[in-house]
Length: 118
Length: 110
Image (cartoon, rainbow over all chains, first blue to last red; front, side, top):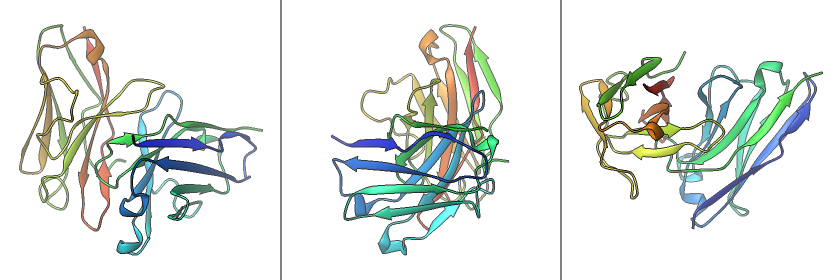
């Protein structure tokens, strides 16, 4: 059974950093692009970014709203994807989801809540 | 601004059909048969309802169907039911192992 579990969310002050993790099981992690999404309160789902497999260079793409502040990485030995969030802003407050895939997202985690507030 | 354009809202009465559009370019929707659709209820994980333009994952009712013409893909929900009320998003492959995402459509069952 494919499972994705996000962790690392919480309350953080503006300007600070937070790292989210997406622990996976039930599939060969190294074979899949992994993606992050978020949903701010009262807003729609927003794609945050995706990281390719090492076979495709392991590079990442980001939404304009987070580019330069967020970094996605992966540890294929642990089957975990990470979302490093720096210089957090109040508008980054959202539930963050990870998903398997880069353009078709069949499996999703349940999300982890991030609140950016002083 | 999202890469794929969806109408912000759509609505229909129970039993009716509603179609949601998703417009991209020849570099994404028009260039590949890899359009997917997702149903998202608040505070729940999104659910894949259509992949590869027309295919339904196991467990998704055949009331959900997908199609594509040129740079525009469409999701049709037939025989609307109350539980279909949700936000719907489209995505498409855009080359180089990643894709693009739509801004979402709020479907209201009247």
